[in-house]
Amino acid sequence: MSTGKTILLVDDDLDILEQLTAILTPQGYQIVTAGGREDAEEQLLMTRPDLAILDVMMEQSDAGFVLAHHVKRLYPDTPVILLTSVTAATSLSFQGVSPDMKSWMNADVIVNKPVRPEQIVAEVRRLLREAPVEKH
Amino acid sequence: MTETKTSLRVLVVDDEEGMRLGVARVIQGFTIDLPNGQGKVVFSLFHASSGEEALETIAASRPDILLLDHKMNGMSGMDVLERIGGEDSGILTIMITAYASLETAILATKRGAYDFLAKPFTPEDLRGTLRKAVKHLMLQRQARQLAEEKRRCRFEFISVLAHELKAPLAAVEGYLNLLADRTNGEELSAYDDMIRRCSLRMEGMRNLIFELLDMTRIESGLKKRTWETVDVVALARTSTETFLPQAQARRIRIDIDAPETLTMSADRGELEILLNNLISNAVKYNRDGGTVTVTLRADENHVTLAVADTGIGLSAEEQDRLFEDFARIKNDKTRNILGSGLGLSTARKLAKLYEGDITVESQPDQGSTFTAVLGRNTQPETPATDAVTN
Image 1: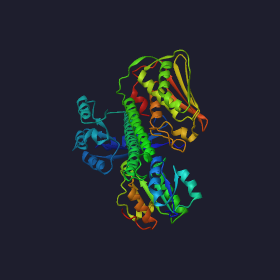
Image 2: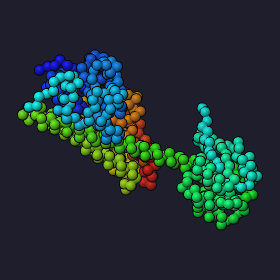
Image 3: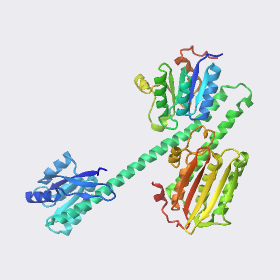
Image 4: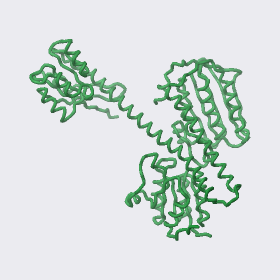
């Protein structure tokens, strides 16, 4: 089963990349990964992803935000999911983020780490306007 | 370069107008040059003619320095001092006493005055007293800034630490979720890679905790330092042996280029940590089939330990932040290498305990050489805290 849709995954944690790939590939998505901001920017020049999943805190603590901005500027229609474990590190809370704040952050959805597989699949499907997965 | 000007607010409280004018004449245009290019201090002056008025003025706009006459009609200077809360007010008070009355001076000091000036005084007396007060005030401010900076550093350190400790947990948790969901089917062997990654991440976390303990022990300055004559060559051999299995697995050769023996006064444990950190890095960041060369040299007062590798190297930019806490260089070449990001910062802190330092020379894809120069005859009394407050 292939949806023909491409997802760009960016995280400096190799294991998170592996896991998200393992979760999303069976759903029929084409996965492109990058281990950092520079790497991701290169990928963005070559591919126009249908969706981007970005870790917030990489080599610089705001790398994800910068990258999200970049994605939106190049491809305004590409939905962005920001992954964060920032809540505990900066005591900023992203719970109940207002639509206003999301647009300021250039994120469509903010997902807290650790990522639950069913949660990320649901968010991806919703943003790509696909029918939710049937429970089995 | 523009010189920084610090303006200090001086409130003169005296019920004699002549005295207020006299003080104003001396202070107006008076500047004090601060040492170490910290610029100069100028004064802005305001007055109060009674204790009551002084309290109002202080409440409205807080002065830095208070020149306070003791003997006034109505509320005395001593009462004002008591009302503003003495030293706790953060206002530096100089009490002006009518004549050199020792009792008044002692009482004023007890209530938190910083200094006193006996009437009659010369302009130079006043300037001298102000100089002393300003010096004290500036030191106080510096100390406060330093404490603030330290608090901020601590907070940052703990934030990053929390992130570094959570990352492996999130990774392991993620793999467990995949296992629980049988993402790769029912066959256990299909999960071997995930299990191996879990072990690796947990090992990384354990290393981080150990290195964190090493670091805090050194930083606290509480660890008992056992001074002895240590043979650095023997120590380097032991350290090399520790990393031999890892090195051999990747066909990396470790050479030691050193005299027969080479002794220095040191705490053996500290030198061990330093050598281990450098040699383990040289193995970790090497290429397969590469070489690690440990070179030991000494002159009368210094021991030089150089650890060279033939590995991935560092860009100039990476070299700049290499010794900071958690300055793990993250790029494609390092993503499979475990590291806590504390090894080099700890090594540098240790080197500083021996009145030395660690420097790096490196070329990307050619290799790096880390050179530690240590004092050969340092004393254990060297206060550990000085070296690490940076």
